[in-house]
Image (cartoon, rainbow over all chains, first blue to last red; front, side, top):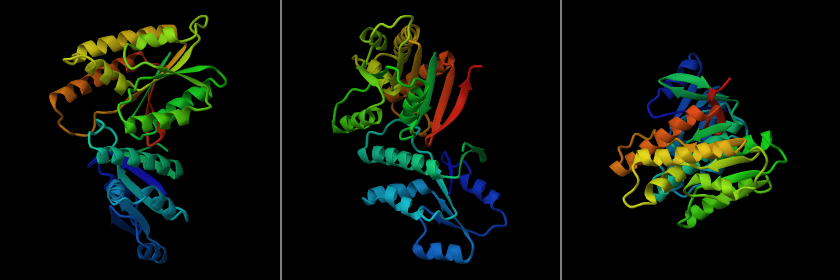
Length: 132
Length: 182
C-alpha cells in the first residue's frame, strides 16, 4: 500500500496517474473498493487507487461506521493499493463537535496508514515529496 | 537547546515529541509542561489520552496554562540547568494568554509575553522541546478575533523557529526536518 497526501487541489491524483502510465488501474472516488471490484482488480491485474479517501472517512463517521477497522481489514491481505487523501488537520480546531472528530480521526487513521505504507508521498503544487 | 515540533490535529506530533525526548534522555527525570485548561468532558478525554501516552515514561507534569516562565520555579533545582522539559502545546498557551483578559490581549503583547517566558525557560533548562500547531492552512476566512489569534500563533512560531536548533514538522506521524542547525 502506498499513501499520497497533500492539501486540497494539489494535483495528487495526477501525480499518481503520471507514475502509473501504461499500467492498468481503477479509481474509486471517496469509497473503498467493493468485494467485486477487488476481484476484478486481481483478475485483470489492475492497481486500485482510492481517491478522496478523507471524504470516505467523513462519510463513515457521519454514518457511525468504523472507518479505522474497515480500512484495516481491507489492507489485511496487502493488496496493491494507492490511497490518496487530503491533509485536513492544518487549521483552527473547529467549534463543531463533528468537524473536530472528523479531523482528529482522519489524522489518526493517516498516521496509522503511513506507518503501514511502503511509501508515503506528500504532494504540493503537483510535485511529490517522498517522506517515507 | 530548543527543539520545535509542529503538526496539525491528529498528526502524531505529541507522540513524536515524547518519543524524541524519551529516546534521547532515557532514564532521566523529565518535566511535562501542560498548558491546556479543561472546561469539558472532551478536554478531559484529551488530557487522559495524553496522560496514558506518557505514563511510565518518567514525565513529571507541571500545569502551567499562562505565564510559562513560572514552570521553572516548580522544578527541582538541578545544578547548571540540567533539567529537560516538553512543553505542550503552544496553541493552548497562546489562546490562554490572549483570552484570559477582557478585552483580549493584542497579538504583539501575547507574542512578547510568551517569548519572554520561553527565553527564561531556555536559560533555565538544558533541553526544551516545544509542541506547536499548524493552524494556518484550512483556507477559511475567520472573524477578526480568530485571525488575531492566528497572527499571534504565526508570530510565536516564527520566533521560536529562529531560536530553535531543530524544527520538525510531523506529517501523518512522519518527521520531516524543516531546520537543522549545523
